[in-house]
Image (cartoon, rainbow, N blue to C red; front, side):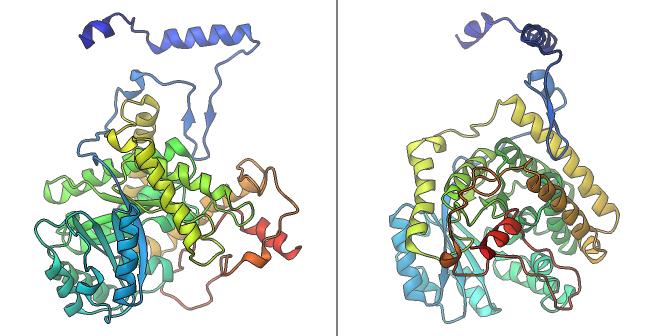
Length: 457
């Protein structure tokens, strides 16, 4: 029946579409069909057809059926953290990320009455204890939904500039943790968000993420491919960000197949970027995070954690936490987008973008690997220089109003005062410590303008 319906539509190739559009534009006084280049120098055409997918390598097999709403809880004591987790689950959260500060947090007390067969769990542990890890591993049942722990010694090197002990000791400790946590789904969670939030362009973000993860495969003989997840920050370029996640899925499955002849699709934890968030007109951040979460959903993220509209300048508080959670709940339960698997599939534009991003990211990835790998590139300051260059390009676009942030460089409320509402440091601080490599620091586009406005309040 469907074939008969479709047969009634005449197939028109892109040349005929081009001719029709050009003829119509000439009537309006335009001599050519408009197109533009993105800041990444990707040529964006006015329309796309199936002909743009002739050489497409993209495959969305094993696409996640749905996505989990994740909430972060800093656990200072077992009882309070458990009560908070149960409260959030009752309000609609489906995934918990516990930041465990010390070994006084008892695992059984922390997870008391939490249905681990339905609730996805993440743990970030701020101390080292093999016995503690074993106690976590022992809790897991065969029917448990998903247990994950966040280790990323290379990510720590990138952020702080130094290994905790040394490269060999840190990676050896990681290997031992993987063996202890044999029941865990993921033990390494690559902090890719740092690259996006520091100014890397979309190609560099994916390439650096893959090269970062590939160092673990190299040092651990490829055996950890199915234990690596990715923590991704979502920017504001809606369709590009959807394609970014699709490209990551495609490339990671390709790389891991080279190690063990098995395709490993990544678990992606996504959250909105900080780079485009502002302290003035901060309510606009709610709109920004909403579209960024939507990009994550359509791109195929498995887990999504929102950030609050005031997280840049304010301490954690119940009101903004509630809004951040409700944003995800509205998207999931009022739009029914979770009922459609791979909702962006079939878009010629998005699939074409996916292929373009994948090809250029793979080229940069190969260049890094052919020159000694990611750690070597960090030690030579190659990664840092590339990110700094990309940041400066984007910052110049912003400073010249070619990239816009509402309330900062467009439609500005010059009478707004914010100084009295700031409760924590909001500007990037330069590193003065002696480190093994130059650390990579997050920086927001609006910082320079905001600093000037605050001084003049």
